[in-house]
Amino acid sequence: METLPARLGGLPRLAGVGLVVVALAGCAVGPDYAAPGQFLPTNWGNAPKTKKPLEARQLSQWWKKLGDVRLNQIVERAVAGNLDVASAKARIREARATRRQAVGALLPQVDGFGSATRSRTAAATSASGGNTTSNLFQSGFDASFELDLFGANYRNVEAATYGIDAADEDLRSVMLTLIGDVATNYIEARGAQARASLARRTAASQRETEKLTRNKFTAGSASPVRMPSWCRLWA
Image (tube, rainbow, N blue to C red; front, side):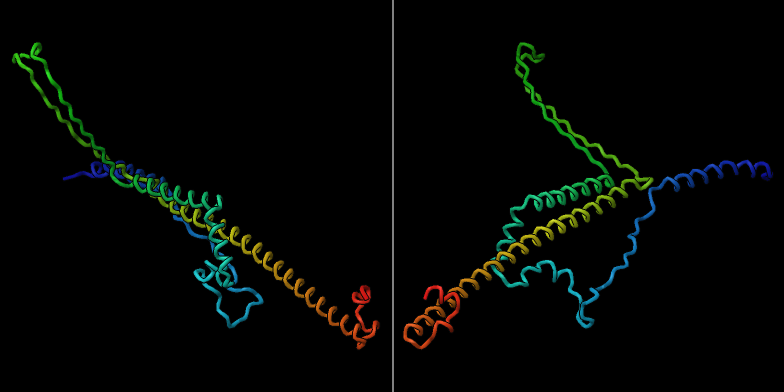
């Protein structure tokens, strides 16, 4: 029959195991990330109450809503030739490669090797007295797996995933700034062209009016008083 002191003798061992488990749990990398709450209005203060806000996919190519083919071509060329956009895309590729590397740390590592050697021995040095040829083939592999005991590798994958999201948002920011600047400058240029065209049409109309008024004055059906000041200067 087991005595009470013998039963109590196993308690320190159990307590030690419990302390190790608690210590390992405390060393685990965490806690899980939780996005902070954002209290943003769903629409602008002066927006109509009955109109639904546009979805993100409807705003992705907002400049095409203007219906200007020339503007679409300019935006495409600007995006294709802009160095900031190229750098942002390169950072996305880098972030994706970093995540693939982080995921690889969670998988078993397998290394393999192989070699082939062919040798020929002359008759003078051969024990058989003739030329001999020998082939030697070697191959093997080595496998290892690192136990992610504290979750560090898993957290690295999470961080790399968020890095991809950050790189994507950086590209969107660069695209938004670039396309906004291109569209603004294009609209201003088109406005200047429209004003110049209006000025030319106005000048042509005034010249036609001056010609008609001068003809009427020459025919005696108009007096100099009724002529505009800019016409009387040339009367």
